[in-house]
Image (cartoon, rainbow, N blue to C red; front, side, top):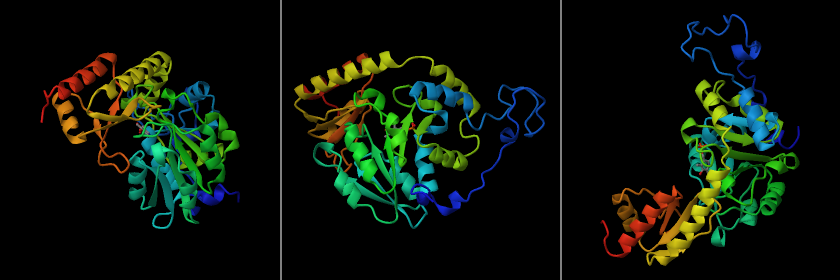
Amino acid sequence: MNSIESLVRPNIRALCPYSTARDEYEGKLGIFLDANESPYPTGWNRYPDPHQKALKEQVAALKGVPAECIFLGNGSDEAIDLCFRIFCTPGEDNAIAIAPSYGMYAVAADINDIGMRQVPLGTDFSLPAEELLAAADAHTKLLFLCSPNNPSGNAFEPAELEALIRRFPGIVVVDEAYADFSAKGSLRERLPELPNLIIFQTLSKAYGLAGLRLGMAFASSYIIRLMSMVKYPYNINQSTQELVSRALQTPIADRVEETVAQRARVAAALPAFRCVKRVYPSDANFLLVQVDDADTLYTHLLADGIIVRNRSRVPGCAGCLRITIGLPSENDQLLQSLSAYEKGDIHR
Ligand SMILES: *Cc1c(COP(=O)(O)O)cnc(C)c1O
């Protein structure tokens, strides 16, 4: 058994997966009397492709990753949950995550009864590599990193991430949900060198398809086979497969470019407000902003119809609001509302 195999739960290693009717016969033409579907055409009477072959070929071409190294899930949420179910024995194993970071890692750990060890980021949200390594023990199976990180907004140096992945004794997940907005790019092309790496990306942010629910994981073909074996057979419905396939034909570069330009503009405008204490550097489509009185400002913005995320109770984010970059006109309104707040024209 190699070192990656030995990280897999014994029951998963031994799993004989469910075989669908569509696994046994894959042709497109014929009289389908094999899956107990309705023969009456409603538009959706046939089961979708459980392997999402056509969509994976499209994602493979777009991302430069072979189709056998791609998993497609019902949002990144599905991929997060699968990592726990594949690698961690409930009540026995543990996982590590940076903190502050995306809340779903800890929730999925709790649901699966897996201990989660949160390691605080260093000064200015730097990667605490030595502390993360020191937190691992013989039962540690997973490490969750997020770059660019939510909610801090910063991306870690690819070389720093790679050095940590090489030294870490378990699986390392690098969540790149916001990589499209970052000049530091993706670790995708390093995958062949790093057998313990799983990369998450999503269509929910830069691609503007949050409502369709499509998350992607990139990893070795061995890990992808495990994920495909454990997922629900028809995890991506027919309409999502079709609509995503169509949407991927529209390039996102212009929208990403505008968002990055707007991020620079809002980040440059914010420090002029007295209530703003600090604007953290961002490689994502949001800004983490430390303000004088986060709760009061949050309520003021809300009364103006502007909804931001109050992160002020998250350890490491005291006094902070997380503000997504919107359309130019929406960002204008945000800045106008801040002006009104400072003129004393505040809602309480
Ligand atoms: C928004 C976000 C996602 C996206 O999750 P989906 O389930 O794909 O919508 C994943 N990771 C992070 C860190 C995020 O902030």
